[in-house]
Every structure is written in structure tokens, then in C-alpha cells.
Figure 1 (cartoon, helix red, strand yellow):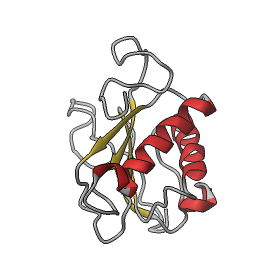
Figure 2 (cartoon, one colour):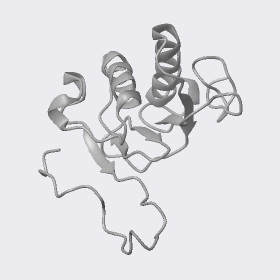
Figure 3 (cartoon, helix red, strand yellow):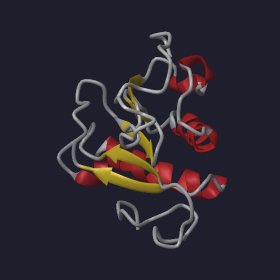
Length: 158
């Protein structure tokens, strides 16, 4: 079932899946009229889940949420995974942007820490990145005494 937080595109439950949990969240309040089924966010959620399943992409949880506060740049989609940077994309068109989202899903699944430059993302997503949020740092230990990121300072275009 789409929107169920335990739904995975490979048919396994969250408990059955091994390794990292990868999740795609789609704003279901984005774009459209008062009827939920007509909202662009709901169309995007359904189309993306179907496309990921058909593509055989790495197992992702796919869920909708009522609002992701990207109202000025709908539709919004987030990519998250355990121990990886997260991404928020906006201005996603459910009619044209599903293929680049599926391509990014495959790319993101292969990235160890989730970091990639804007230029390495699928062309359909260039200029649509609203945020890249670093993964939470590992707990403090004697050999790692501060919370500063382990990643070097990077080009702002990344």
C-alpha cells in the first residue's frame, strides 16, 4: 500500500529488509484542487512508487506526508537513508520528473555517504535541489571529541 511506512518497492517489509533503510517521502498536499486524488503530490507518489517497483530499483520505503513546507516550489520529494546525507527536491512535475527521480534513487542507493555534486545528479533534477542535509554525526568518542563534520568544506554548488 502506498503511504504505508512499511511499504518497500521490493515487496519486503521493513523488518525483512537487510542493511540500510532508504526512504522517499513525497508531499501529498502539493499542487491541485481540494480533492486529494487530484493533487499533484498524490499523483507523484503513486507514479513514483510504481516506477521504482517496475525499475527494480534498490528497496525503498515510499511514503506520503501532508506537508513538507515547500509550498513555494511544489511538488517536493525527500530522499533519506540511515547514515547518509538527505536531499529535498522541489518543483517536481509528476508528468515529467519521475524518470530522473528513479535515476537518482539508483544513484543515491549506491552512494556510501549520500553526497554527490549537483552536476552528477540526473539532468532533470538540476536546479531543483532545495536542500542537502548532512547525516547526523556519530556519537562522541575519545578519538572523536567534537561534533564538526568529518566532510571537508565543499563547493557551495555541491
